[in-house]
Image (cartoon, rainbow, N blue to C red; front, side, top):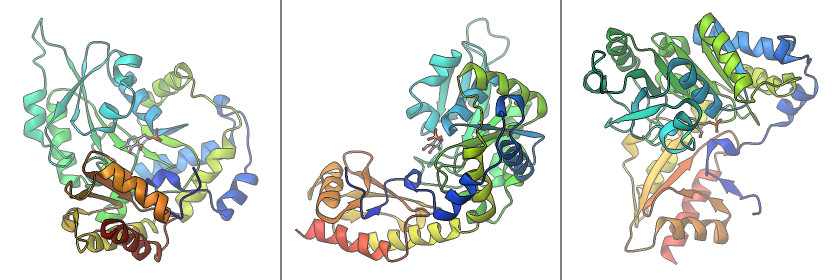
Amino acid sequence: MPIPRIDLYSDTQTRPSPAMRRAIAAAEVGDEQRGEDPTVNRLQEMVAELLGKERALFLPSGTMCNEIAYRVWGRPGEEIILDRTAHALHYETGAPAALSGLMTRPLEGLRGVFDAEMVEAAVRPRDSRHAPRSALVSIEQTSNLGGGRVWPVTRIEEVAEAARRHGLPVHMDGARLLNAVVASGVPARDHAASCDSVWIDLSKGLGCPVGAVLAGGSDFVEEAFRCKHLFGGAMRQAGIIAAAGVYALDNNVERLAEDHAHARQLGEGLAEISGLRIDPAEIETNMVYFEVDPARMTAPDFSARLLAQHGVRIGAVGPRQMRAVTHLDVAAPDIPAALRAMAAVLAA
Ligand SMILES: Cc1ncc(COP(=O)(O)O)c(C=O)c1O
C-alpha cells in the first residue's frame, strides 16, 4: 500500500522525526538485561519519576506491559475485572488466558469508564468453593474504544478504593495516559497514584518507533523483569530504541494538545457533513469516532474510497463506525483537506 497522503488511521502511524533519529544515532548503549544500558536506565528513571513509582521497566510493546502485569498479579483460573471495551479483551489475542491462565470479567462501563459500584458487584466472594477468584482491576486511560475518553482522577480513586477493600491491585493501561494528562491538566503521577502498576506507550502519541515503559513498586518491577525474560522481551543494546523515548518525553508531551485541537476541529467539521453522524462533545483527546449513514454506504466502503480516491486513510471499525486518530504527523492543513475528501466521497 502506498503511504497515504493523510494518515488518520492511528497514532501508531508516526515516523521518527529527523531530531529523534539523531537522538537514536547518538545513543549510548550497553547490555540492558544486565542493567548496563545507560539510555534504558535513564528512560526508566524518567518514567518512574513521571508516574511517581519506585521503578520502571522498558518493554518492547504496550501489549507486553499489560500481559506482564496480569501475569504478576494473577494466578491461573482467576479473573481480571475490566471494561467490556478493554484493549486487553479485544486486541491482545486472548493473551490473558493463553499466557497466564486468566479469565476476564467485563463490566458495562460508559464509553470505557466504569465505577466503584460495578467493581463491588463484580468481585467474587473469597469464601466460595465454586467461584473463580478476582485477581485485579484493570483500567484504560484514555479508553480507546470509549472514544479516547479520559478517566477523571476521582473516578480512578473510587474504583481503586473499592478494589483495595477486597485486597485487589489496580493496573492502568496507560497507552494514552499522557493524552489524558494534557487534556485534564492533572499530572501523570496523580492519575497513577492509586494504581499498583501503570505504563505509558512510546509508540503512540509520543511518536517513537517502538517501546513502552511499565512502572510500579520495586517488588512488582522485579517480578515483571522475570516475566520480561519469560515472554522473550528482554533485549540487549536497547538504548538504541530507548533514546527515542527519552527524546519524546523531553519534546513531544505538551504538543499532544495540538492533536486534541485537531481532533476537535475534525469532529466539528464532520458534524457538518451530510451522511455522517457524530457528537463532537464526546471528543476529549485525539480520537474521533463517527458513523456513516448506512443508506449511503458502509463504513468499510467509505474507508476504501477515501483512501483510493483521495489518499486519506481512516479505518472502519464496524459496519457503520469509523475511527480517526490525530497525531504528530498530522499537520493543521490536513484536517480541512480530510474533511473535503470525506464530503467529496459522500457527494459522488
Ligand atoms: C488502549 C491500548 N492498550 C494497549 C495497546 C497495545 O499497545 P502496543 O501496540 O504497543 O502493543 C494499545 C494499542 O493500540 C491500546 O490502544
